[in-house]
Image (tube, rainbow, N blue to C red; front, top):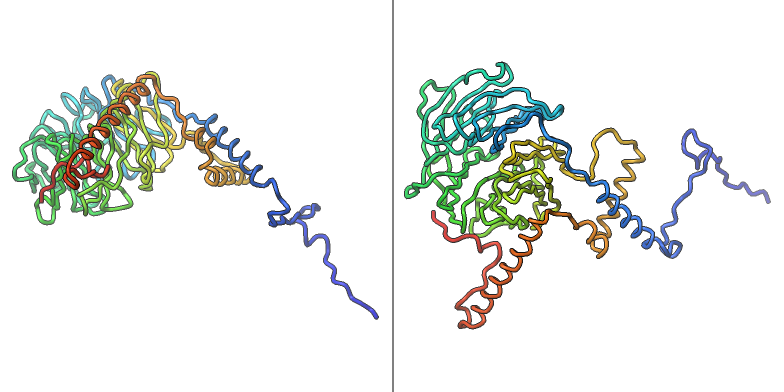
Length: 445
């Protein structure tokens, strides 16, 4: 009997243009008894290499400021341009690619309290000299006079509407100005009926564009609705807040940088408790901002450090510092999500990598595959003690480390006192308060 056998050419098991046969992988775990051991070793080595190549600091912007850098403003229509304002009233526009100064002007007599860009790429600045100035950095030379000036109270913060030619400025109240009107008077004024304190900061929601959030020296967070020309509700925290940042991807969520060393995330629809509490700083948090993806935050603190946070986690994933960097008053995230900016009291504007060990530039297909494989291994074995220890360890300044130890002892003492009080009281008289509710003292509507 004649039998016809199936046969295939050798080229069917070869890559195009190659004479090497493909090797199929046998997925039977009994054939690979040391697979997990090999993968663990590779994950451990990848974690070590990630920490070895962590070099977050890229450089500073020349020639910098003479005084401290207290405010930032990113141009929403540009990936490479942003502005900074200093304590001597100087405003500068920088090129992030070359790290060089593009334009500057004397905007105010003293500290630049707030800055923002308009829709037509003009720059608005405000200061405690009771002026709001409008500049055009892209078409006018340096040190040119302002295009327009608005007079009012001692302004402390400013924000622009996403679509309309309107901006909000804060003093002892929030004033809404229309840039298309020739008169300098505000078209709308917002204020809590019983509040007389100075407003520290305000932020205009860029998604729900009728909502404005503000924080005042009386420790209150107040949300306003421009459609009804009235405040929504008022939440009093234990200490005052220095900065507010809205999540660009989730319209109702925002973060506040507080004087009690923490950053709090809130949902404006339910202000009874915080969404998350970000702990790690050992001094007042002066500035906070969300990443363009809304998944991470960056904060700058009086303890001379910059911290990066995962939105879902309560402790920072990284901490940036240098020997010469002083107290950080302003931070920002680049529009391409790859870099972080910080402005400090020493007059320097610094540029950092958002991921300390990441490198930009063209990568070969093999390198991209290797990096993806390493990331998958690190995620799979991140719970292992040695890998977790290496991935979490950071060298911090001695002052920060010592202050952190003291703060840890103080918080443990407070917690122990609360537990003793609860244990020696009648049942149900002293309630154990959740960590995300402790910072809220009162709520008003």
